[in-house]
Length: 329
Ligand code: SAM
Ligand code: DTB
Ligand code: SF4
Image (cartoon, rainbow, N blue to C red):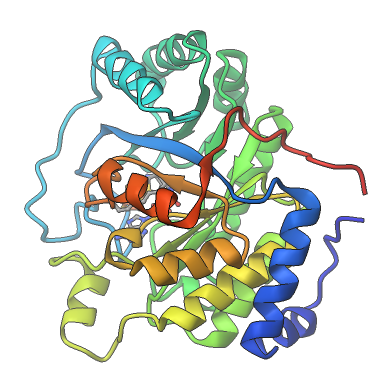
């Protein structure tokens, strides 16, 4: 049975396990629910970059940050479809479109739905991350063919206020509910390495694993420190040290054990991770990555590095998207 009634004590106890026992248990559960050695590939495109009114302390696109990033308008539908066709040609099974908005405006909804329909018609899965959604917006995107919506909880309820002040945790939970009610699959995760404590990582994964239904996709990002952002500058000035690799792998393993059916995505921060750490993440149950040499605004490992890593580890790109619910209990 998939559990949604995890207690914080359960999550803490998993984090406290001897590392090898934890990773072994995560891989055991992984193999029960997912095909071994297979990793799903998704491609990201920033369809509307910069100038965001929100104050997320990690984000290069916040208008509150001093990153010098130029704010752009929403891309044309044709340019988005061109990028999606290229992603498909490069073997991506999912195309994720991200916009630096607090929420989509009514005037953009038709263009967004046209993008979704166009990408869907290419035979690849569609995902968007556009900020908060009303129930009506969620329904319109779902009707247009949107498969996944990404909206992260980002961290524990306790640490959240130290990272973002312009949007509440509850508002994020409300958007997730609207996405679910519209019948879309949920992509929801967060960021590790924002100066949070172990207990915050416990609280973050507890919040994800006790949602009414587990997210189908759980992106675990390692903070990419961007100069000019609150967190990027804090990291540069040292009180906040880069997350320890072993602690990051532990987080991936605990996510896998708590949410056995979910795709756990090794997301931002992979570019600065060693091959050995990435291999441990795959062993701990990560089975999805972003491909290409760019995420939204920051760098990514790139196709060459990924092909070499897959070759070295004997990993295969997932052929078709894994069904949201893989195996019966
Ligand atoms: N504006 C939309 C929103 O926030 O809902 C969508 C785009 S936002 C860039 C999507 C997610 O990317 C964030 O919730 C955060 O978890 C992640 N992210 C953004 N900047 C990051 C960074 N510098 N390092 C790691 N993850 C980051
Ligand atoms: C998520 O959790 N990670 C992706 C996706 N959702 C949209 C974004 C990572 C962004 C990294 C910072 C940047 O490139 O701007
Ligand atoms: Fe805006 Fe999203 Fe960046 Fe927050 S994470 S500042 S909402 S683009």
